[in-house]
Every structure is written in structure tokens, then in C-alpha cells.
Image (cartoon, rainbow, N blue to C red):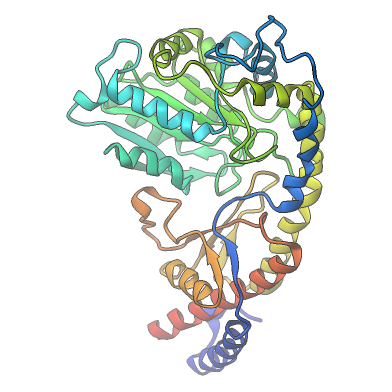
Length: 431
């Protein structure tokens, strides 16, 4: 079919009628489908079930330094877990804190400590007249929710194919002392699947912040979440931000976060923070009154199950085998049904958990509403932008992992029907 914008009004009306009939048929099925969050599906969760038995019958519940994991102690994580997560993100064990189950919780606490106590002796953010954060868009809604809750002003930074617009980042960071941080998902970004280029990482490391307590919040959530087998040199991913910051003379400028939430069990995994040893010491000085220590039994369970980073990577290949067909189903359907119509574009990620879909400007909210009315719940339009405001009302985050393949096929067909119908209605309103 030729591009929609080339259709006459009569052709659009005829198309609207057929699409409306198709939509009503889908609506009549009484669907109850949820693609609102990037949750692993049951088949993925089943992959880690053997880990639940790895400590059964074990008489040795001690860490390599002799600590009994069933008791109090070790604020920053057991040595074996620190080594595993250091290998996961390219850090030294001395630069790692292994904490609870949620990396988002760690990020939230980093913001809260900065607000209450300040970072490394600097003025607490809560005592400042203005605090700003840079937000690459589209981005992760929960990141933006954290900074919004603390009343921090958020500034949109456009995402390019190689990462955030670094000209804008440098301009803000290097000249405005109120800019205290930036949210980053450097590998398979949420939702666009962008992987930061070497140049982008180097430019981050070489920032010259006007604020001495500026921090890059480097959320490496999908660093080993590949959809396809890659050569070892490709699998290395991006430049090591900790090493690059050290080279640039900015060793304290980055907090890096990661977790096993989508590797083992969301809500029952393990999360870690890596940073300079000075930042780690600063954080531990505040945390020592917050907790006596994290869940070390769960940390030991993970270490004994994976053994090392190679075991974790092999496990991720099992995940990829489950979710790769789901991504391909969605992408193939989008191409078959919408390709050539010039009404939408979408990312084609090689890893991560999402597909970023851009509808015709002014259509995203209506598409999401139509889907919901027919029984398909999507992430809210605008969620990938600070304050939930997408200036173009265009972006929709697609999360293919939770539904079964059969459910996903139904959901994707409904989605493209809604995209077509809403777009035709908009074009008719303009003719």
C-alpha cells in the first residue's frame, strides 16, 4: 500500500471504515493483555529455579573470608559477590558494593543521601535553591520518577544513535553548577536500545563539571542482555566508564549500577553499585547507620549457582533463546503491517528489553487509549519523558517479554490496527 499521506480523503474514509471494523472485532474478543512493564515471562523465570536448591544440604555457609552468611555483618557484600559483580561491569572488587535486590533502590538512596547529607562534604542538595538533572529522552520512567519526587528540575536531552546529545550535555554540565547529575542507560538503553559509542563514553569521562558534586548515574541494567550471540570482541560492549573517568582525572564522577533482576528473579535478585573507592567510602560512612548488612544468603546462592561471570553469560544465552523470537515476532509484524506507510518508525535492538516505537506526532496517547479499550495495556504514552510529557506525543514503549508468543501475536496485531486507525483519523482531521 502507498504511504497514507498520499491517500485521498475518499481513500482514507474507506480505509477508516475497514480499520474500525477490524478494531471492533478485536475489541469483541474480551482480551486481557498486559505489556506495560519489562517483566520476564514465566519461561524465563523457570530458568533460574535450580538456584533455589543450590544451598540445600550445604554444611558450608561461610564466605571465603570465613563469615557465616546467616549472621550479621559485611555492609558492602560478601567478597565472592563483589568479585562476580566487578567482573560483570569491569570494576575492581574494591570499587564494588553488593547490596539488596534492587538497583533502583540503590539509585534512590544515592539521591536521598545527596539531598540529606551531601556528597563527599559538599552542601546537601536540599539546602540549595536549585538542583537540576539531565534526562536523555526517551528514557526510563522510574529514573525520572525518582528525581521528580525529590523536586529536582529535569532537563530533556535528545538521544542520538550513539547516545545522548553530548554537545548539550557538555554545555549544561560544564557551565551550570546547579546541574548535579545525569541519568544514563549506556547499553541497550530503555527504551530505544541505544548503545553508547566510544566517543560518547570518552566525552562523558572528560566532562568538566561546574559542580564538584556532579555525578553520572550510569545504570548498566542491560550490559549482558544480548539477544544474539556475538563474538568476544563485540560482547565487550562499550568502553569502561570507570577506567575512562580515571584516565581523565575524574575518578569520582560516576556511580555505576547493575543487578540480576532480569537475570535471575526480579524482586529476589542481587544489585550492586560500583564507583571510586573514595565514593564507596563516603557512601559506607552514611549507610553504616542504615543497615547492618544486606541479604548475604542470597548473595552466596547467586555466587554458588553461577560460579563466575562465564556462568552468568551462559545463563543469559538461555534467556536470549526465549525472548529473541518474541522480539522478532513484533519487529516482523511492524515491518509487514507498517513498513512503507510512512506513519511510524521503531528501534531494532540487539539486546535489552524494549522496542521504542514512534508514531505520527500527536497520536501516541490515542493509540495507547485505543489499545486499552480493546484489552491491551501498554506503558502510558509520555512515560519515557520527564513529568510524563512527550512534546511530540509520539513515543510508545513496547515490552515484548512477558506475554506468551501466542498472546504477543494477538497483542501486536491489535497494536498495529490501533496505530493505523488513529493515524488515519488524524490525517482525516487535517484534510
